[in-house]
Image (cartoon, rainbow, N blue to C red):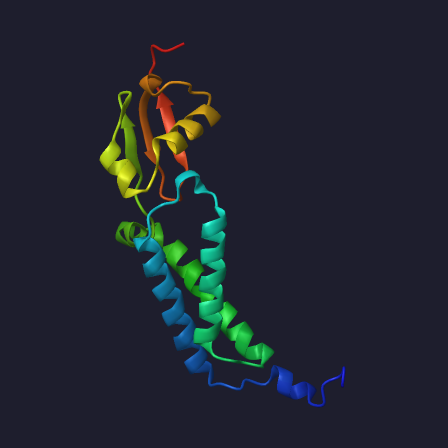
Length: 166
């Protein structure tokens, strides 16, 4: 049993071509981005246990897809590729609205003038109990007191009270 590696240089040496690592990382980044965009927003913008398991499984699948690398440099190339694409997509989303629409879900109205929009709730797998719970967290005790409520792109529920309600 050894505690010290025999070849320190091998730890930092790329064992896969830089371009291959970049292409694999890019494909994985945009593939996961596209798949996550197709998923419904999670009500509340929080990770439930099942969602956390899902994210862990995605991470494990991503690690398998990238291959079994032993080089720290290879891992750094992949991480930098992910970070660079994420930064570039965020920077370009501001001047290019179509890119923002591709990467972020628009708000979806779930209450209009005190009435539940059940079709929209069903699209997002949002139960009435979950919605009421989020309204109570915002100090709203009755759906009839809500002018409008939306599930935002990141999953948070926002509500606007009717003006004539105390």
